[in-house]
Length: 327
Image (cartoon, rainbow, N blue to C red; front, side):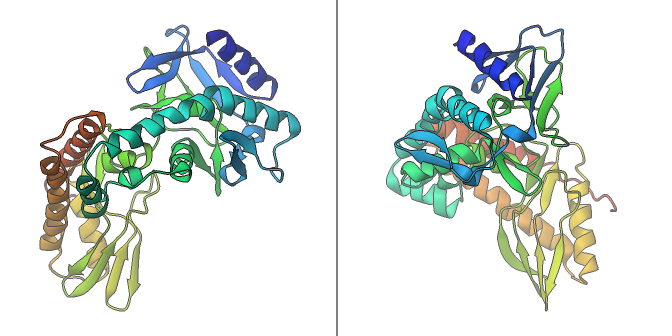
């Protein structure tokens, strides 16, 4: 595999890619990228000519194909198809299929509760070929400007606490790593990581579930439309109804910030009873993830352990909401 990997990297570089001081290895999340020499910096960069729109991919007879109308050049098209066959879709979709198989091992009524009552995502739906494809490529793509693109080679890097992707020109990850190379996929919470990628990892913040209720006699709708790096939620008004595109409920580094942001937005809208409203939203969220843990008490398995960890990480981040910081 290492010879094939190095040959693929040579072709990647010939098309403008950067791949310095890297090798394939096995880490905490399975296959990943490691430095050849941990004392030297790592650099992996996908140039714009190798970023393919997700809308241009086709699965034909189980094989990855680039659509005829794609903007990729002939050499780039050939590289992407061969890369996907050897290092991504061709031998990597088994990881996604295994997640669905683990979920299907739970009784049908438990899966229904996890998906509908506790909103743990489509991992607990009845899987089909389209669902597997959608989950696989959703977990290996990135928003580049207004395009949702596949990022060959860089997508082999697993999630961790390092810096995020550099998307100023292509998509790149750089740095010095003592062990496995990692990149922060997103600043979203542990729950959001599980929904999209199917794994659990402690995150700095906890965001609210999507909820509808009221605050001070005004309707309040909270969404989960969060973009990494967004400092404040957007407040929209529709008559007496209010809407936030997301709401932070706790932050490990800034525990006084969550209430400060909510109070500011609600005061801007002229809402009353904001202290009780925040506590109620927190309570609903805590009960949701405590409910997940209670539901899973009789069960074991990799998916169950992952769900328990996700719920614990989310509850821990929710607990970091102490005091109020003026915003």
